[in-house]
Every structure is written in C-alpha cells, then in structure tokens.
Image (cartoon, rainbow, N blue to C red; front, top):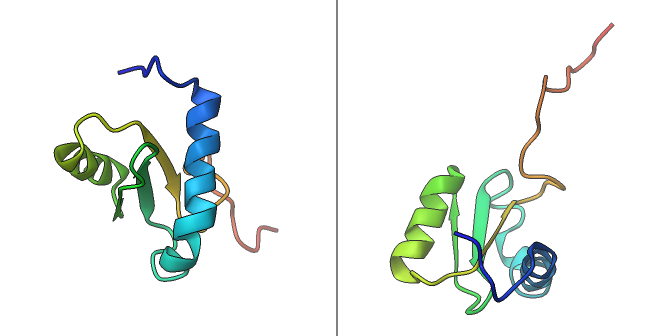
Length: 89
C-alpha cells in the first residue's frame, strides 16, 4: 500500500539514515546476508533470512509501519539475471 506521507526517496533516505546511524554496527557482521526491515517512523525493525517474513513480523507488531528494507552487508537487496560466476574462464 503506498504511503502518501512520504515519497519513495524520503522513505529510502530516512531508512538508510536509521540503518547507518543506529543499526549497522549492531547487526553487521553477525547477520550479513539477512534482510532487515525498518519502520522509518518508530525505528522498530525485524531481521530474517526471508524478507517477506521479516516484513510480516514488523507489520504484525506495528501495523501502520512505513517500511524500508535492505540486505545486510550488501549494496543491493536483489539481483536480476544470472549470478556472478567465480573463476570464469
């Protein structure tokens, strides 16, 4: 459901700020590769290997959440296409 209070850019900026300032040092490297979802209004968050499960848990406890998600330790959460091959010749 779209959030009229924030543009997608505002959600991303606020979520990234919360992650970098409050959570990054707490969750890395223990949860590297897991998904983290943050309610940008309260700072509440959930971590899971499955991004949908993390979001469902966050919404169960904070139904009006404005959610920002990321993959811990990665610059992007998803990749489309073939995975990078190691030692390709």
